[in-house]
Length: 527
Image (cartoon, rainbow, N blue to C red):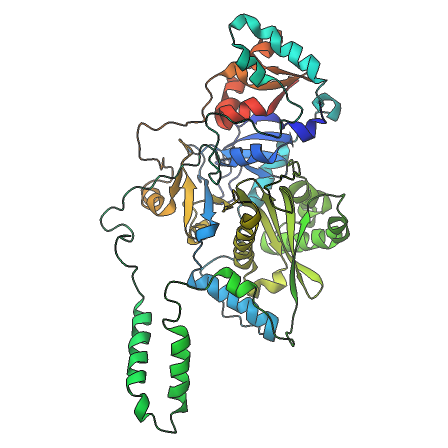
């Protein structure tokens, strides 16, 4: 078999009976989640896991127990290709432009959204390392494929067909995911990612059959413009202001009625030669083999500590180099390049914001088959006036669109979790259009349909089809792949060999949470 890391995800499941302190409502034991340690993980497996409500913090991958945890956390994704820039988003983009070109430091910024657009993940590292794995690397390296096949074929007596046995065999190139009956249509993120569009209820949202509503301000502008044009013949010499006003209105009123400015219009604008500052965004793979990552590591780690102490009130020992490495540099994701993938490849990256030769912010992201997933952001608190949390989220949406040009399947921006019960965390819903993941059927639902339900109850099933079930649910426990004594085998074989009390309840729980597809692809480590 090829090196274990390059061919299959290897995970150690920890369950999730203990409650941890909640970073939102401060309940000491209310934060409940299931967790597993990912020794290695393919980008496709992680994509499928986040489409079932999982999320990573370093190498720890966790899934909130939604109907029990004190502050339910719903996976949220923004449809990057259809993203609409809000008024406050434009303010942030303009402010950055002004700062770079003129050095303007206007403090009167949009206070509607928190600066730290990834605040929730700071809380996750509290519990992530209580469950750290202590399994040695040698135990995680499967033996040759032949040996594995022999073990898997032992299981003939439970009436499996030849095809089923073959499906369990370890191919050395198991990064190429076989076409399942529920394999996704390109552009659709995983079999679970069906979108439910219910017809708008009376009084709920816009009626799409009618022309879009226009702002009163735009209508006033247009009337003013028409008046100015009517009075143009009798504009006196002294009314330069009005004439200037007319030009301004001509430019801004209805020049592009259906084409509002995009993020790209603000971000990729050519700057004047005498611009006061230079901002450069660099994408660096998270790897100590990478020269750029290595050379900027100390500066990046120092910035992380400065940010954690100022914004999250960490002590110096909470945010040293070891903590930084564990939380934001150790990733289970295997870097992968695919012919129809982005040029930078898939995997974990740091997007560094360099201002005049120094790092002022770092967005930690995962580039996956169908999305860019935001992991964390830290920035220099001295530059808080630039709203770097919002600015980086907008840049990451623009980056997703850029990657989509080369990788057509990659079209979503995952923002982590949306927590409606914590008002401070609701701002993520302002990146529209966006969808929330149904915690029971793993179907994506437009956020507009979810918000009325969440106002009524903090835990909700968004899928209104009462007959709908989790399509990716576990159907055959015996087919779960296990790594035991360096040998890959189906759970049905492992169960017969196992000595001591049965672990079936734990394996059943693991399989129901990761789903049938991942349970047959990933290796569940058993000691």
